[in-house]
Image (tube, rainbow, N blue to C red; front, top):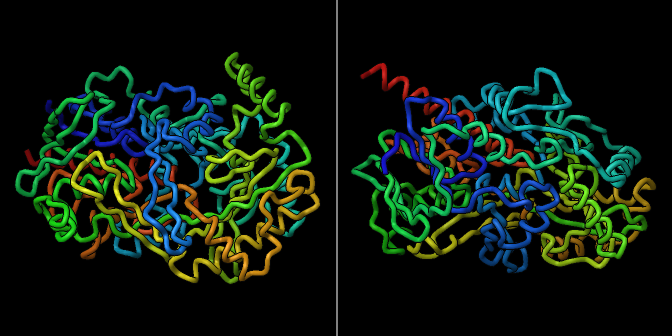
Length: 536
């Protein structure tokens, strides 16, 4: 099969690319997604994330290699395996990061990626229901809303932060990021608004876009230094796709570098060690993995209006599920779990927050893979710009094997100390009078340990907050994988467009920035196509 453009991966970025490129009726686009169509109620019901994040359902459910900084534990790395990718299973928090994060990208040699350069693409993607000003879009496909039915614990958390002396922020994507407040979410009419829901629905009915699910990309096909297609297994059978213009790899921070490596693009020795013919040497493929290490403190609640397994709690869940099915979207089925949070500084001299909090209206043990017997709440603390960096590598030359993932969490002592300081800040909120009924008692008491003992607990309990980036980073140095136009360096007809191109972590959740990257990349591809037409 032959198309003008082939997009590999139908997730947060790939759905955007396929939709935007197919706006031109004169081109044909194929979208290749290994997962299934996004039809499951577990996707569209916000609370359905409780069925996807802890399990392999619609989820790659990867594990890391043993982490020395985490006492040699193997971490857990859920990634969406369906149209919409991780935006179909995430907590729907809409955060862009700090403006200075993008100015950092530009300062690293990535022209066109400063805050003023990327803001128009955030605006282009966004349709914000509440906030109408110059920093928010109202006409984009991605709906940004308030929770239909927030929990009382959310209000208590914000009041506790005020009591503890922290700033209150009503818009984390406004002029200032610092402070504590409630999160806006990517929902529409009480349902999840994934990138597939937002963008592929716009393309429904376009005959020039064909979406292939259950289609696993095995390798990119190179003719010399030009990418001319993708070999796949589709519904169990081999299928080759050929492209006339470009292949766009949007498989995510783990699978994009894996596909490049399987195609002979990457560090020479790693390719040789895996018996893969070397097509193009790029030493940075799979390097520079960055993620937000996250510690979760959990508390029993006196009040039963937060999630718990008691008879009352189970009855509430069944009641709200029935109401949701009947079109009444109030109640627990609408929750994204992480209803509130904040961005704090561990040192007042810092120019921007270095800590993020996620306040969750349930007790989360081991990514909700272990069920707590209590009603309660959790407070996540993560550091936003860790010094520790890791990598993604091949486990073998078999495309069906999961990649080796090493985020290298807490390898740097500075990360440990910064996380410790952040946890102590969160402790002030959780021990406030306003939170007394919700943070009544720690389920696994550690917060009153001395610092040296708490550090041991940090290493015992820290894991990802689901924001891996950077493994095909953009730049102009020898370790960069793509240039500022997201073209794979030294090759033609091939781009990478997803979170893997981020040169550094942004200060916040990564889904909205990934969608922004794809919006900007779509214009880049269209511009290239237009320039080629002029030449012809």
